[in-house]
Image (tube, rainbow, N blue to C red; front, side, top):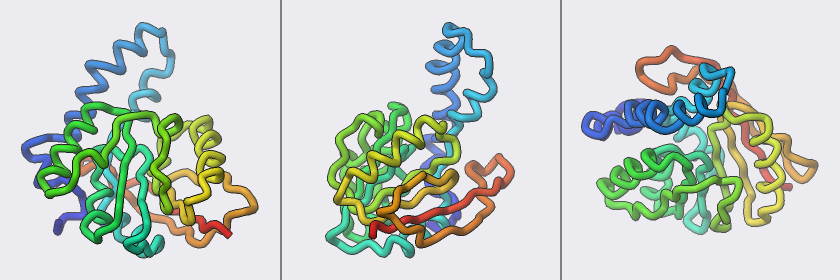
Length: 206
């Protein structure tokens, strides 16, 4: 697509941004209120949804340099917008996303692009059995420290992984990994939100 935001044309009829905030209102906020959550605004901000811009997607693909034998995995994949560029190149790609409404919309999007919608999986990526990926990506900006601490050792133990990329917060990777890329970017996660600074990191297994 020509726009720097994936799903622009698709979202005119499916409205993924609204879909996400509607799920906040219908599902998450009532639960949080029932749990007497004090920092409700913080929870809402942490659950806000945005797809990785196309320009960042292309940069990540350039850094990962995937080949047809690779398997790409997007953790916290949203509506699966980052799967299509890999699938277009004939590379196996999967995404894991916990929000069922985003998964449903993403599967419709993938199907509209003639891709297998089953490559977008609903589940918790910390618990889901990963499909032997060779490269993983995750937009970690809104991840908690607990999630980051849990994710790094899982990635390290998954011996098939040769490259890891994150946009946002860095993972604490061990001595078996080399940081091969770090760059700063101004990202607009949604068209109606201002740009924010984010850092792209990439590690390669030694």
